[in-house]
Image 1: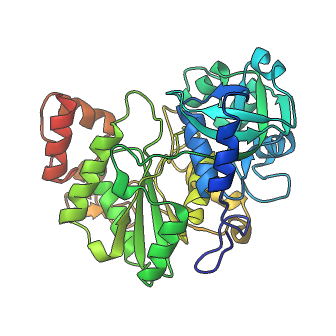
Image 2: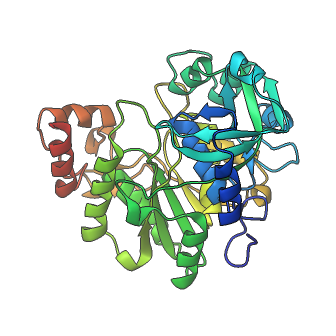
Amino acid sequence: MTHTDGIAPHGGQLINRIATTAEKEEFLAQADKLPRITLDKRATSDLVMIAIGGFSPLKGFMEKADYETVVEEMHLSNGVPWSIPVTLSVSEEVADSLKEGNWVRLDDPNGNFIGVLELTQKYHYNKTHEAVNVYKTDESKHPGVKVIYDQGAVNLAGPVWLLQRDEHPLFPKYQIDPAESRKLFKERGWSTVVGFQTRNPIHRAHEYIQKCALEVVDGLFLHPLVGATKSDDIPADVRMRCYEIMMDNYFPQDRVILAINPSAMRYAGPREAIFHAIVRKNYGCTHFIVGRDHAGVGDYYGTYDAQHIFDEFDPDALGIVPMKFEHAFYCKRTGQMATTKTSPSSKEERIHLSGTKVREMLRRGEMPPPQFSRPEVAAELIKAMQN
């Protein structure tokens, strides 16, 4: 799929690895003969994102050369910026049973035949080295590091084909792939589009920075992540209902598109901010919002490390403009949302509520103050937290 309108996809071409009807028939005819691997939720998400072009220019799971330069230098082996390894790991036993050059059947966690891998390479890798470089820690309590430590010792690499993709069971109308989002942006006449990534319910600080960004671009692409997240994160269906409430009541609908991002969270902080920006570039965004502690977890990353990392890349090579926002709060003195860039208030005049504190309030059935959350959103969250 070649690029014709809007911002160029990462690497210059929007990848499409969805099997044609003929390819699907050929693969299905061999379904019972192929060696089989069952993907976990994250690998299933990665397969889908590769196939629909969300991970362009990747055509499959990374070979060793790309893996090593991504881990070491945050670039693919051809020099294209890329910050997160996208790999398929299996045990030594499984790897030994597979032969390079052959096809491998890929099943989803429910046992459905959803994809095929052309196995071009299998290679060992250093788990601790990947953890320290990508996540800045080797502690297994970090959710991203734990995934590395729990997965197999051998990476399988090669191009993939996606054979089956069902409608999302909860959000079918928001399942908008990169080719479609690009078409929508063109139909609306948007030449500049800002993307927003979140795994949390929307609050007033989110709304504030989204609307600040919307003042200077043509459209806003609200793109909540609905792939695998930590067990204590707010469920995707709750977060999406909150966004629907905001769309119905507080956003100009002709300037905002709500869609789901099927990716899984890595919790890689700064490196994931780059990764999230590249994905939104593939969806057609020209700009990307980066707030405080983007994709962070615990105390592993500095408050604005995810903004500083963009300065390490050639802006032209990255090809998407970061819009960097400071931590927003409700300013009692001015009676509105603000940041330290715009507010003359003292610390005592600022209302900051952490996500942890808000979750505790919601579980007790307490309504967060309107300075933090729109009342309709808070009511939805209370209902969900008490079920």
